[in-house]
Structure formats: structure tokens, C-alpha cells
Image (cartoon, rainbow over all chains, first blue to last red; front, side):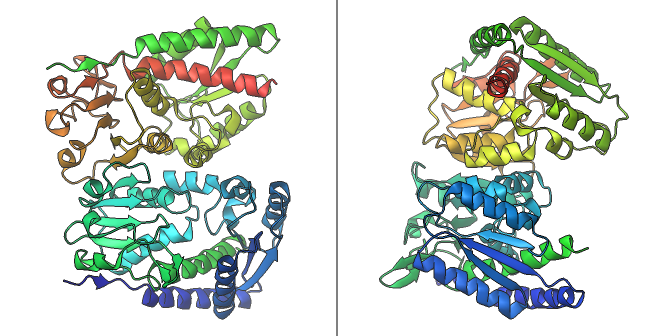
Length: 281
Length: 281
């Protein structure tokens, strides 16, 4: 058996077409949507990612500014910048790009991002609002998992979904998105004992750890749907958290690249036009 | 076999002794700790609960005011009151008691409670902060589960803990508290398929649904520790979510009453002195 590939490309194209139409309407009405990405790193893969967001934004008719504070920026400086952007009516969406300088934590500085502009759900208050079902932006990666499952008609309600990874940007918000959709959710992590015994019982398995090949066939139940959130740079190029042999066991599997990634970028843009629509009406 | 009863009484006594000593020190320093409970209901069991908090506070040397807005209070009125209390330097802790008037949601009005005074963790931002490990008060009931397990030396790290119930006041915050302690966490709820198959594999089972006798021996793995958060008023008096026969299967079980309840009240008082200490130094 070979798992059905759950591509994210077609979905991303559809989301971006919708975003372009909405961005054009906003521009016509005199409110061109604008996203600011704040960086404080010299990390190369981060720079590559930011330029890919900027290009995608430009294509969709969203102005994207990159504000580089440099790798020595302090937490106070970053917070000050995020507060200023939050108060600037010309800016509709704000992304604080990681990695951050040593000793600076994303969830710490992100409290300075206004909830209504927090298009990548980095402010802990956005996570709290998500958890109780209030309107807020989820981290785009976490939401991309849900959108991808919906697009491929994988039922969530009543499913048992295992999420491997408990980060504030994927595992934790994803757990809440899944609970909001009536899935039973198990969150596993590095301290989980006998991971395969737990994950192999899941209908849906989401790998969001950031370790190449961590998930192997022993972790996967018969006919499970596997979503690979990992993007690990290796000598063989970009690979996910799921080993290639998983395709022999899983019923469906997202490719890396071409699965969760393109949907994530498209959702960042959708959040930005949505934020602009809300702020301009 | 009969499960070991995991009493909360001794732990509650110890917490209250600590609270009394800290409240006395605060009073001596000219900062008598003060808690305000806001009510907007004529519900009798709520009135009984509030009077039990007020009595326990008085015994510990904490002034407890009950501010009754009446069962017809609107969301705006409630929010206005909570904001005023949050701005009042003489008030250190604020509890918004439930039930609320029809159409008013706790997580909605609770956004008006200042994080530093939110001693029952009702503001969604408190939940978000809890999720990312920032200082914040957890809902006392959720924290009582952790304190009770610690008190009875039940190891959390590496355990597989199933939480039945996904409320914003117990299930969801408890999931984060457990993840912060390195437990693997499964959150189950009314839409979970084959609940016994999932819960019977857990080392620790927490019932937080509010339905008398929902958890029976079929739900409980051999030697599992069972924590009963339920407090259901029945013709037979106050009973938990766990059926009495559970004691034949579980290795340990909290009684209702006398388990989680007294610890919850004690923690509300501890949060209040802690809030007062932080606000007065």
C-alpha cells in the first residue's frame, strides 16, 4: 500500500485567489492591506522564509514591509516596536519572525502585538481566546493542519487525534482547534513514555516536533491519516518529521515540501486581509 | 481491592495555615488582603459556595466582600464592575461567581478582570499565559487536581493522564498544567467515541464533566489513580462524576466531598494572598 498524498498546493492556490480578490476590494475602497514582518536575526533560512512571505504577499496585492531590528535587539526594543506597529492604523497585520536574539522569548515579546493584528497568533492572549472560542487568529501553521484535513475531507468530529509536539506555535493551539472541532486529542512530547503505543491508536497523527524522521511505521496505526508539520533542513534537502517508510502504513500523508507549508503561507495572507477588513470597517 | 482514598482535607488545612501566616504578615505591614466575589444570580448552591469562601477567607484573615449585581445584570454592567474592581488598589483578588444571567458568558466578561487580580483564572488571557508558562493564576479547581496528586506523591512526569471534560475552567487549563509537568495528556468529552477504550489506558484519570456516576469501572485501567472533580447535587446528597464501584478497580480515588473541593477553596485564598503580596511590594 502507498499512502494517498495530501497535497497542500491546490488548497493554497484557492486561498490565495480569495485573498487577492479581497485585497483588491480593500485597495479600491482606499484601504490597501499591509503586513509588517519584524525580524531580529541573521538566520538564513528565516531570511528565505520572510522573502517567500513578502513575495506571496506582493502577488496577492498585500504590501509587506520587513522591519529588521538586527540580531542584537533587546526584548524592550522589540516590544516597543511591536507596540508602535500595533498603534499604527496603516498596518493591519504584524508577524514577529523567529528565531529571536538569545534570551528573548517569542511569547514574552508577542504580548505587545495587538490581538486584532496578531495574524500569526503569537500573543498568549490570542491562544487563550482561541481556547475559549473567542474570535482570534490561530498560529497559521496550526490552522493549516485543520484546513488541510478539511480540504481532503478527513472527518475531525469524534476522531482520536494525536499531536506529537507541545509548542506554543503548533502543538498547543492545534490541540484547542481540534477540541473546538470535537476531536478527542492526545498531546505527546519528548517526555512521553512509549510513544508508539499511544500514537498507533490515533485516527489522525500530527507530527510537529522538528526532528527529521522521528515518526516511523511503528508509530502509525493501520489506515491512519498522518500530517507532517516538520520542516527540517538536512543534507538531502528539506524533510519532514515523518520517515519516508510511513507511506507503507498510513492511508494518507502530507508531503514535505508541498503539504502544510504552502497552506501556512496562504493563511498568513488570509489573516492579513481579514484583519484589514475588520480594522477598516 | 478497595482504592486508597485521596483525601484533600489535610492538604487544605496545610495550605490554609500557610495562607493565614502570610495574611497576618500583610496585615501587619498595613496591607490587609482583600478578595471581592461578584455574583449575579439567585442560585442557591452558588450562594452556599460563596458563603463558604467568605467564611474560609475570614478564618484566614482575608477580608471577603460579596458584591451582588442581581440576576438581571447585563454583560456591560458586569464588565464595568470588574474593571472598577481591577483598578481599585484596596482589592487584591476578584472572583466572578457563576452561574451568570442568561446570555452572559464567563469567559466574555472575565476579560475585564485584571490578570494580576484574576485569582480564579477566569480571564482567557490568564489561560493563554498559563499555556505558555508565564506567571498567571490557574483556575483553582484545575490547580487543586495537581496539588492533590503532588500531595499524595502520584508522579506526573511521563504519566498518561486522561481528562474527561473540556471546560475553560477545568479541562482545558488542567491539560496545560499537566503538559507543563511533562504528562502526556488526552482530553476527552461528550463527543469522544468509545470513551472506555481511551480512558482505561490512562495512568491517571480525571473526571470533570458534571454528571453523576458517569465514570464506572469499565472506564478505569487496573491500578489507575482517579481524581473526581464533579460535584453534583442529587437526592442522595453531593456526589461526584465517578460511580462508587470505581473503588473496586482504581488504586486510589478522591472522595466527594472531601477531595478536590477543600483544596480548591484553600487555593483561592492562597492566590489572594499571593496577589496581595505582589501588588503591595
